[in-house]
Length: 198
Image (cartoon, rainbow, N blue to C red; front, top):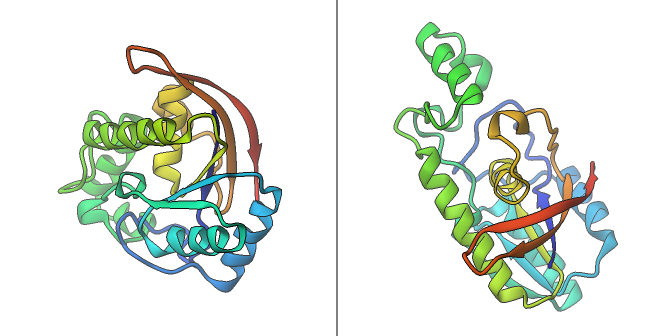
């Protein structure tokens, strides 16, 4: 199936670890998303429940008469004690700086303190991806979500090691187009078709 993943638009909070923090998209962020979605052609829209993703998905579905599903498995990583804080402020503390560096280098070894464990994050993104594939039945599907779940899908589908994925820039309103399949044993495979910046 054709699966397009789009990161929500600008929230005015670049540099902050806003996982579950529910900040809205700015007006310019909504314009970014509108421009990115001009391509059209999707029959199904799935979205994270956070308003920075959901509002764009609802607006798109309403104007195109697409099927819309709100799926909590596409929500961003829970950053625990880092939640809602600027990375630069976290890194001002030596211990937190070391934890943050380890998280980006090897998230399997270092989860955000009191936050979501990486294996749990992978499991729920896999669930969301499996549901999207089951529901699509060959139809083109759009998911409006967050950078974390998008990177996790790239790792799951393309087999790219997670530490390598930080090298892929996923700015606000970036779209990643994939062809995705699932084998009889539940494993995913696919190819990267497009990477479209805002």
